[in-house]
Length: 200
Image (tube, rainbow, N blue to C red; front, side, top):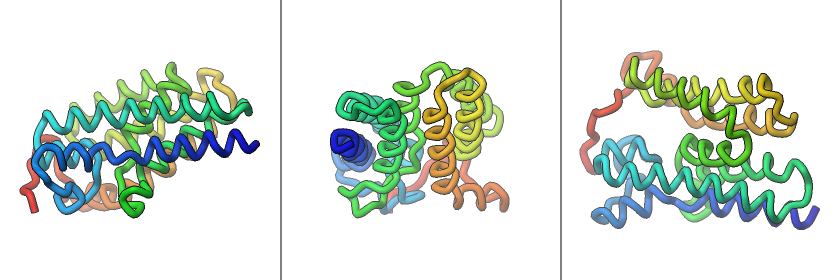
């Protein structure tokens, strides 16, 4: 159990690496938390700094999510270590200790984490994300729909119960982190993909 706890801590700390914050700093010294939505995710980086920094943020978040789960499963001997590490990595991204627990929304880190945990379930969720984004141009809507579909896909594809539970918990976290976006979607004030946000 001690090794599993250590693995979960490693997964959290890897997930907590603030990729978007670091990319924004390197791109021009911007504190991405003071622009746009105030989060450190790729969507806010895109709206604030453009495509290049956003792609770096996206790739970095996906990679760290994948590595976090691998670390948890390598250190922790329990069969559920990787599933718990997935949740820990997403929690790290959303509430990073390095930025006083003010982070992203867990989508890209969750993508990388679930690619390590339940890769076959990620494909249909990713297709759904692309379809909703293409039709609506609302990244937040696509993210919520895709994350809610993931535990259903994991269940239908026969993944272990702990993986299905991890996907459900992750979906709840991501929906909670998007609660303001959901409110804006309901009121018709949510920004669409491609709209730029001026620097603070």
